Structures are given as structure tokens and as C-alpha cells.
Length: 221
Image (cartoon, rainbow, N blue to C red; front, side):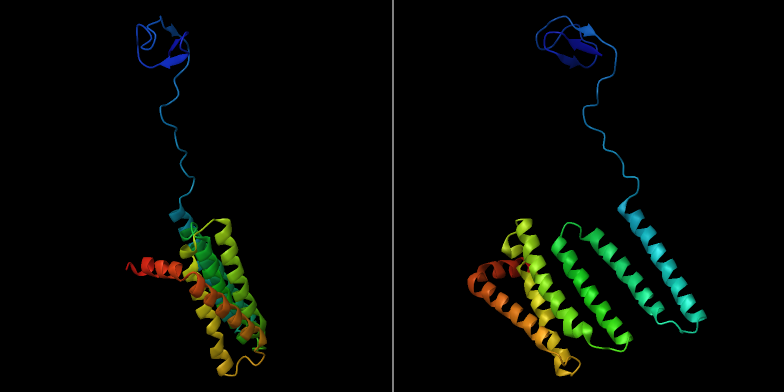
């Protein structure tokens, strides 16, 4: 390796003088660092990680099904473990694929959590705790989390307003359980629906242009 004592720069190749100041070069021991940094290869790729997780998920599900069959369905926790393993796998896959959109990740996780909790409630005698408290509270928390994350990430309203509209539709779906008589303690559900209706009304009245822009982007209008 050659170096120019005057310019203090390293010179590649074999030169007779410095190309900048024409001074005599000095040879020093050592190798020049590469022109571009070398990127370290990942020890394991996302695809490989997903395959490993999927294999473990399938293996666990097979084991749980086998144990549930061998014990002649005497233990009620095996179906819950089977469902819980599925939820963990879905959450993991969703997080990997949607890691750049935290609002979408949280929305999907809330959907999965609601389905699982309602299933567990029905599987354990359907005491109604999922419809009475869990679903309304989770939906209100989802709206707060969506707005908080959007503010932290400094997102424009048209980038997340459709998620709030989708959350409104989920909140309105609670009316189905109320009409069917499956939710008799309706106050939390009505509160969550009212909360979303007021929030959506404010967005439509004061920020209709953002809603229109988001809809046009979604449908490529």
C-alpha cells in the first residue's frame, strides 16, 4: 500500500507520485480497506425462519391432536392449546410479513384475539365475558393504539384513516350478538359502538378529504 505523506491519502495500485500533489509516495505495510463496506450475511433468512416455525407449529399441533385423541377427549385444555399454538404462529407470521406496518399488525392481532377469546368463552360454557367486556374494551383500546402509533410515527391521516373505518365495522358487528340475545349486558358494547360512531363522524366532517384520498389510493381511482 502506498501513502502520500503530504496529502495523507492512500493510493491504490503502483504509482510513481501522488496524483494530487505530485509528491513522492511512501510504501507502508497493510492492505487498503475495500471501496465498499462488506455486508454481513444473515445467519438465517426470513424464509428459513418461517419454515422452521411452521414445522414446529405443525409438529406441536400433531402432538396435541394425538394426546387429545389418546386421552379420549377427557381434558378440555387440549383444544385451547391447539388454538393457542395456531394463534402464536399466525401472530408470528403476520408480524414478519407486516413488520413495516405496525397498525396493520395490531389490527390483525386484535381480530385473532377476539376470535380466540369468543371461542374459549363458548368452549368453557359461554359465560359471556368475551362479549360483555373483552370485545368492547379491546376495540376501544385498538382505536387509541392506532391513533397513538400514527402520531408517534408521524403518519398522515389518510395513511391510517381506513383502519379506523374498519374498526368501526368490527364495533358495529357487536349488534349481531345483541340481536341474537347472546349479549345481554349491552352497556360496554353500546359504549364502544358510540365511541366509534362519534370518532368516525368527526373524521368524516372535519377530515373528509383525507378519507377520500385514502379510498382513492386503496381502489386506485
